Image (cartoon, rainbow, N blue to C red; front, side):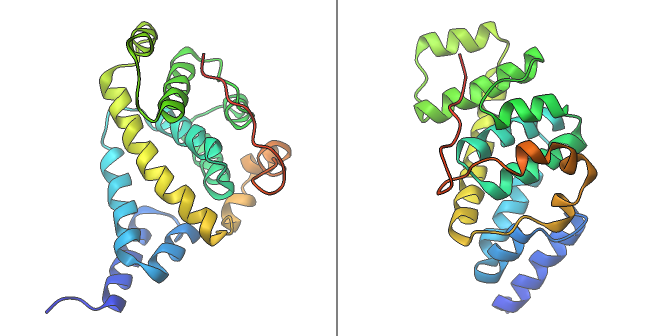
Length: 199
């Protein structure tokens, strides 16, 4: 017998409890209306976490995407997760402000992310050669593309839902330290998003 909507919701809640220290508001919002969508997010994130990008590299990419898309929820959440994964406060602040991290590998990955976003994936030969010189592989590009697809999905859901940032995130000491940057940035409807750098 197919599971009911309520049973599907409960199964997703169990997935979230296994993955996260608390059920994020984003998952709650998705699961309330579409447990299939919530399950898709969790399952896809689980899959890409087995990829080649290191955790702090993946968080830098996600942070760049979320800031590019002006997502209040994901930008703050992944500032926290990035810090937990080993990103420095300076790197997080640089990405939030539309700049680039100092560390060459992170810098190259953020540049690649912004090029893909700006060009909707239509990279020309010059772009590919530039990324090759920066040691950004096709593996990196394809995993970045997965993260772009996943985060456009979650960023746009959070725009529609005006998802509230989770209190454990806003109260975390490392986020409090960065709050002048990540807490007081201007978001859509409040001011202009920062111009981004990728060259």
